[in-house]
Amino acid sequence: MNERDRAEEHLRVIRTLMERATIYRAISAPTALAGGVIAIALTAIIWIREHHWAENAPEVMRHISTRGFALLWLSALAIVIALNTFFVWRKAQHDGRPFISPSMKLALRSIVPCLVLPAATTIWFFYDGYEFDNELLLVRVWIGFYGLALIATQHFAPRSLVFLGWAFLMTAAAMMVASRQLEYYATPLVPNIAMGVTFGLYHLIYAVCVWNSPVRAGSK
Image (tube, rainbow, N blue to C red; front, side, top):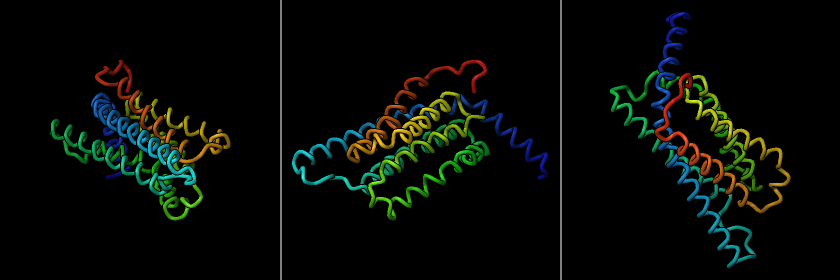
């Protein structure tokens, strides 16, 4: 395949993705709802356990370790990815399309580069970053680059998904600017709340806003 054929195929896939914006938004709504509920529930569980521990053993700084905190949130991520994979597979089966289609490959090529640094940061955190209570840094990276991953789909994704990405990115930027103030509070209080507000509340708001809503003329 020459360069011209590759370019034409690339444009064809992008047009297909844009035409299916409503479908992808319909899939993203239940995923966002499930992810939001899981994130809010996990935030509440961590909050309750830490406060219970603080009341019964105030001499102990924390009950959930830094690694434990990250493992809990990575487990929640794995559940949401599994749910989204199921929703995409079910829709592909219903429409008679292959699960791993050219459209999916293009979407993954857009998203994956935004996940390299968060993956490296997570590996570093489990290796030795956890020893210095770097949860706030880890959470900022997760939130910011998740936002960038959503924004990277702006050429073919629904606008609502891109707006969600900007909400995540701007929150991470604000957390970076307010680092000194946030670090004043005890961990994992602030990182836990940040995860609950972004991956929990933001996703719930997104799900409510786009559930069964029609795409406006000219929107992607």
